[in-house]
Length: 138
Image (cartoon, rainbow, N blue to C red):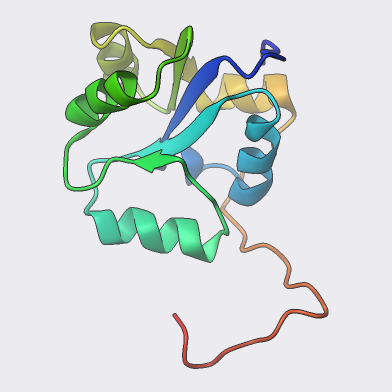
């Protein structure tokens, strides 16, 4: 992926694309080193995105909430001012949407190859030894 060392980029992952990456937490941590803002956009209900983010320890600066992807990309662009907006997706609909909304589009497979992210079913991050396990928490 093209380096943006100044952190002057807003990077949005489509939930479908993020679900094709083996280590979403590592992807977000890596993306934060060269992006100003990183988040998730989806057509799924808010709780689906929130549960995925919590399960995979993804700290997002924004997410789509109850809106669709189009409204979300517009809202993110209005709220987070950066010189570049990049949308990582996984299909032609995502590509068309990005283009329509004035975002650069990057297919998840191309992004994974460029950034050396592993494709595969998402795996929850390993629990640290000193981290407490709670049975009463989702």
